[in-house]
Length: 433
Image 1 (cartoon, rainbow, N blue to C red):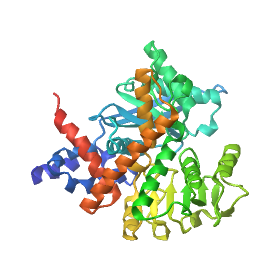
Image 2: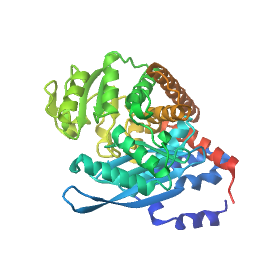
Image 3: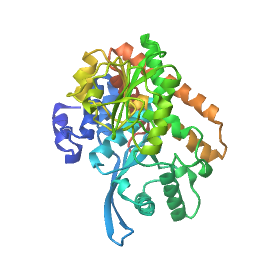
Image 4: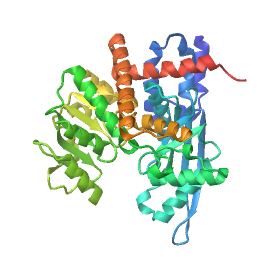
């Protein structure tokens, strides 16, 4: 590529694709730029990774219980489908933005390629606080959103799944809506469904279990014993809570937790099972009697062996990264660490296991669910967990090898592995027409 062509390309990008955007999409673009020197001849296709294939923004109007017609903004972004159908969750949150959904769809492309699952990347969301909606309103929002994005989703094109504030009930409504519009039951259009509708055993715990598996692999390779290891978890839902329970069962000490309701600390260890029961009853870790409350900022200063950010993106920043005292960060959330914070942690000698590997357990078992739906033959939970652990360990090993050979961080290594696979598929497929 000539220097003249290179100078033209950035200015030709739409405004929402610029890397100077400080949102999540800008963070993703900076991550991709770091991989460019390691792609060899495939670097000619790099712009493919910087431009989502398809962006759909939809209006989601519903009638509220009080008769008022409310409008919500919804998104579905398909980042890349060179390796297979788009795959990624749908989140309901009052702060959802296009930049966020674009970045999440791109990270799904990288994640699926990093663990070698034959999917591309996609993501969806609605800017709504689901806590303000009744069950009926939530169902109407879900069904209207599904109808609006129905033109681009499908079992062989783009398969949604649960994400922040969505669950198997939301997936059941999405599957039913799509099926009614198609005139036939299509269980494979979404994953993370109830077991009775073609869901997979082990799916609910899959992401947290994957975090646990790669956390143990990282500990093993760095000589850290899990027995007695101090663990801190931010976010105590379906990912952080499950990971905390599994580490606790393996003999680690859960010394600190944080979620939207507050932060807790106990040097002797927190009973993860008891805390999960408390969260199920109250909706948050706040008020739990088995630990002491601490300031939210203080959570990041607790001395630990393993830190698991499993809440939302951009939680570890250049402001709190210097205060973090841990050996290993295992990213349970998507994009929890900013690029600047990543550099700070690297300079401090902290091993960061990136989200695109660490939290890939969910999409891996989603793939298992999708396969089972097509065959109408379902595996046992033990079979699911065994297959999941094998995939996660193999993915970790491949990334670890590249990081060692290239002398780069685990995040850059994961992007090298994934982007190489994506761009090789792009090159082999060519351009049509």
